[in-house]
Image 1 (cartoon, rainbow over the protein chains, first blue to last red):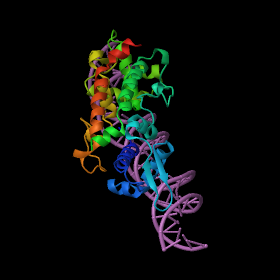
Image 2 (cartoon, rainbow over the protein chains, first blue to last red):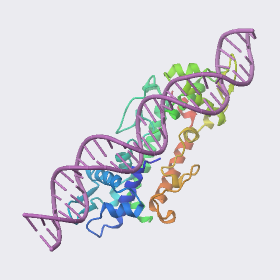
Image 3 (cartoon, chains in turn red, blue, purple, brown):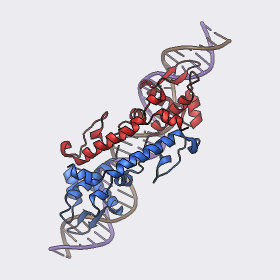
Image 4 (cartoon, chains in turn purple, green, cyan, brown):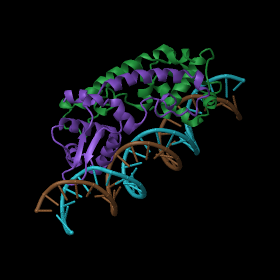
Length: 138
Length: 138
DNA sequence: AAGAAAGCCTATAAAATAAATAGGGTTTAT
DNA sequence: ATAAACCCTATTTATTTTATAGGCTTTCTT
């Protein structure tokens, strides 16, 4: 399951995607719309900004805005950013690799091999679904 | 990512699958093979037994054994049993449905709709990969 | 220039979940 | 009768997630 962080990020991105006509959107407005903690959401938007998905304007009259096309924001990107690995095991993670302590030999581990296949197929799904798909379904 | 519970369960199932020739396998042997806590693994095997994947024999000379064909044990089953939902959001979970607090209207939520598609495609993967695939890759 | 509005940043606290441990109960072979 | 092994439930510990806190910096407006 996705963490609340990722879920809130998706809601925020959706909100921002719906309001691309206005220059900026306030954290406050997104938080209120979904009944989310303002401060918690603030941290999330910060991360999305650092990752290059959002732009922001400081000071009075400021706020956030999308700087990518919704079709160029795949779910895989958002999930990796906030939740980490998409792979089901650390030993087959592309971006967050770690060996499994209980594994005798990675080279001959059937679990690893199957999980690598699962990862590849899962990635195909999550790379193909984008914010645009969410927006067209709203 | 899978919890350690699920990961250990897969290791245990793999071990049991490799030793189908012997009548029973001791918790102890599986735990030792992978350096896992005996007691923790005991709880896991209990769950697998209650779910109908394993049989057991009590008392001296007892132990666990597979009671299903490896090809009839899909990853989806093991994951659901020990980790819970396969869906990425509670509002699209088949077996563990719950509404999302921050969602104004499930009927018109684009996130929900896309996540339902993701769930369907993910399920296809996890229902098609079985313990047998793991065993043939060892 | 001053004040208020808004994002930026880091740290900490609280809550929830996962992992591990504990210990006695029951069954069965010898 | 004894020892080996699984059965069951509860508790503790560790880890992670969620939320909060508070001051800093930037920018607009007057």
